[in-house]
Length: 131
Image (cartoon, rainbow, N blue to C red):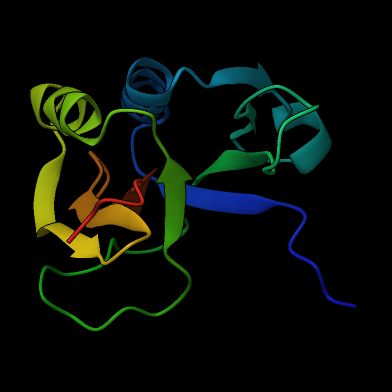
């Protein structure tokens, strides 16, 4: 099977991106630059006993994505306990709205944002009453 086991978020400003993801989602980072041979910070996204994966922030090697262009890659979605509180943190820390909160009826609330580096990501709050 080809199960997803790691992700990389390409960033222009490593410290700005670490602050954004650390403060919004509580991620912690470890410098793996010597191992990778370039600016590269491993991201621990939660408790190892909970569902989810860890990843990394990597220094972008080319131009950032342009606003409005079609995605070329994967959009990561983070699970949150309180959608509105997560959105408030995202916007307060320099993120931007890409697709407003909408209901996945009977399942969850979903929406998409741009991080401080111009990358799109989603947030997802399970809620059986979403409609």
